[in-house]
Length: 109
Image (cartoon, rainbow, N blue to C red; front, side, top):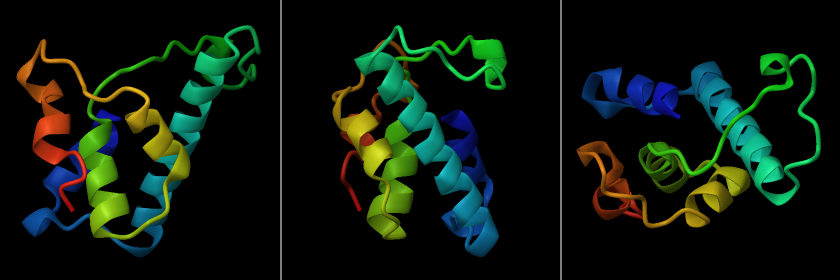
């Protein structure tokens, strides 16, 4: 998820992109979240061969909150799978400062 949060943070004045860029990022977020949710609920279902040579390792991860907050809460984009992924792993851990994101970005709007 760092690609989405890094991209958003690198835009001038915190703009999250629009049009094709917004669609590409949020579609990627939903795709990634869907794969992770599927792997968590049915770990024996094989990943398609074209995706990472069928070797997808996922899980809690971190850095989802910032992107969800920006695109779903601020830009009003529907991200049901991303929201489910985030809600299933709240609160994020506290091993590194970057994973305090539930506290700093969770549903902040």
